[in-house]
Image (cartoon, rainbow, N blue to C red; front, side, top):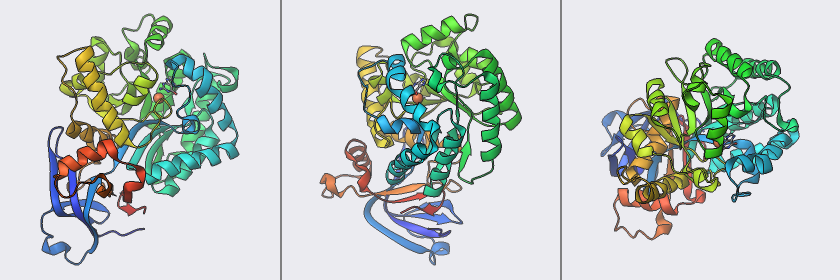
Length: 426
Ligand code: GUN
Ligand code: FE
């Protein structure tokens, strides 16, 4: 529903910064001209004639950003979780993605992914499609029609892939990418294209050179995978023997951040000192996908280190390395995994806290889309209303404690209402 000016009344919480939650019990969250105007204890005079949506007793939170998700993998999620990354790709992922050559199959299955994303707490996502341009365009149409905000990529892979999921050549891959970009660059207001080389093992030097040129010409953002799993990192070393690290190889093709190349790199579990310095210099966004990293035996990313360095970090489901779309689930996993890392790997890096992962889910990932993830003036109006009455709070917990319980206990059906970029979806 389009309603430019309105007020949501309820128990409001957002991150002021990494450590600090701003909470207001029985407060007023104002949307003015489709954009957030702020949170107030009492409703200021100038908003008195706005419609009030009364969510008294419910939590009102900023929408979450899923910074890394594979839409075609939603179909087979939670299968093959006993395999490591490369074996899992060959056994489950590639055969599944090949089916999206068929646009009818794509329409039916992408609709289910979009349906799940729509009903949960996520309002935005950076999404991988497949190598198939037409199916990826269908995915974008479904996301736009659902009212979500997303960046979506047609995937590039022209080598080291099975015949049934490998583009004919670097030229064909680049040409199909340009066709996709020309179709989609201005087609929708809320869903836009993003350049998506799958990862270095499946992209030839010729293709990467062409993608670097395309990035410069179209000035579009980039998403890919970086230093995820031991055998993958070893393979990249063999493929790019002269690069100082995995990230440096992307960088040599102009696909690793910098002024006009906003870039998300998923995982960064095994990044070393040289790579971390380059990530920082180039302003890379890290998509931390803790559930995937445990399922695919990748390890535990040093997120505390990245935060200490001032590197941007958001959370990703990495469906189907992960199993749940809801970023609440990634938040709980991020805390758990950081504790394991602290206990088993390195006690100098303190575990993440609930306020910190809430920041990553909202402001951290949201920043890739601009002013997103806070309830401050001028931010996009992305919010959801959560009914946490099932957790038996009985009035004894404050808003920060209720948020903490929601992180561990929530289900999608407790999301009663959702707003994305000022529009009410339900
Ligand atoms: N690396 C290359 N492709 C993939 C993928 O589909 N999922 C994950 N987790 N890592 C990848
Ligand atoms: Fe991934």
